[in-house]
Length: 87
Picture 1 (cartoon, rainbow, N blue to C red):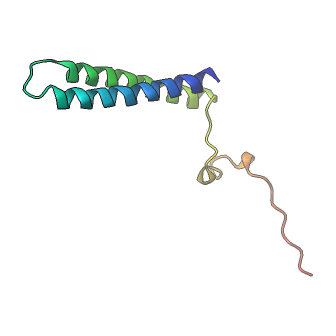
Picture 2 (tube, rainbow, N blue to C red; picture 1 turned 135 degrees about the horizontal axis):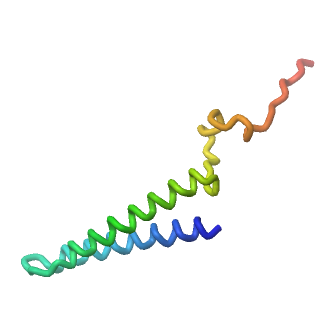
Picture 3 (tube, one colour; picture 1 turned 90 degrees about the vertical axis):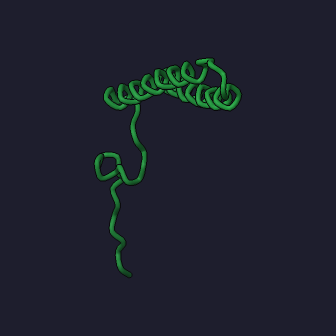
């Protein structure tokens, strides 16, 4: 459970850094401030931490996929079907 919370927090942090970088970019035109560059660095660090957390979750088995197209990769998760009997 803590891994999913960490992933959500990192994703929200990436979105906040992205939006603050956009604001800094629009406000600091012609100014020599490096706030946009710092926002980019923070975003890259948060995004790499997010990717590492997702890879760790998939590799350790704490995260799994329930997508319908993933069932053929994991046939044990598919419920057995019984053929219909003709009347």
